[in-house]
Image (cartoon, rainbow, N blue to C red; front, side):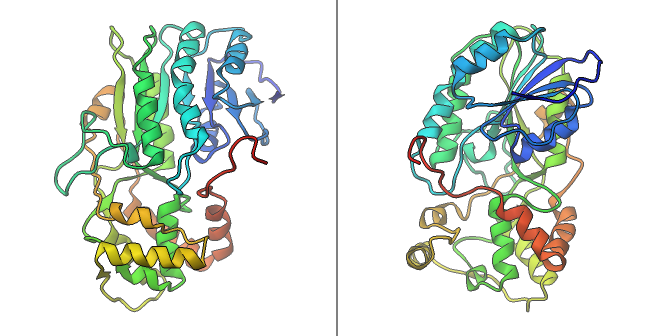
Length: 361
């Protein structure tokens, strides 16, 4: 365990799992003034601030987490569960199953050691939602989708969340694609990087370019979590599923046009190719370059569209986004073209390849 010097103030205590991750790091910076933070992650402790306590452990080892909860001197005021495995191989991985299987036990343990009004906040994903079509907004009641390995594990986690009843409020925040001023969102970075490098793959697209995704800035994510911690929830406790993203999606064409202009590329239309040819191309490229991000399985998802209705989120926790990807793209692209070393440093450290299985060396 690593612990920073206490400030002497008595503050409410939060637990954050996945505290070393992209969102977890930003969240610690946002909340450490207001809360004492108990941070859990597989990674060793970074530099800690006053009131932060670090435990290097696997959150799926719920017995260890419960021993930690039992030692607390006061009840938790909330738990933010960010820790989850993901990669873009779309292959089964034991960590997916471990994350989903440990959910119910973790929630039950939280229920025993948290204050009665302390929320359990679970970070779910837009990837676990079924896509829509332009003009038809998704809501908290929209269908779920387990179309590939990562969202399938999130859907299993959501079901496990609903298998346990605790007296505390349970909040499921469904995050859109989370980015920063430096990008740090793997699929978006890969799209921009193909254009920056003049990669021929950037000229072709296996679907309609007027489709797109919903995004959300990491600063807005931390604001949403803070709002969820402060909100009052009705009784009896019902699980609150809240969508966290920008109301307007950003299309594939808009990203292509902005990046092409920023990198001085000749403006040419994106050529639509049949999905089978795109699949075959990804298959062939994969034979020669294992580092290529675009995998054959991704082709079937190229035309997916996500568009959020945020009315329920605003009504429950009073949150709306303050930033927009279209406004942030110029800053992002300026870094990519003017400070390429920083651009690559910030983005290439974001994990996306399959991790070794536990015990496999």
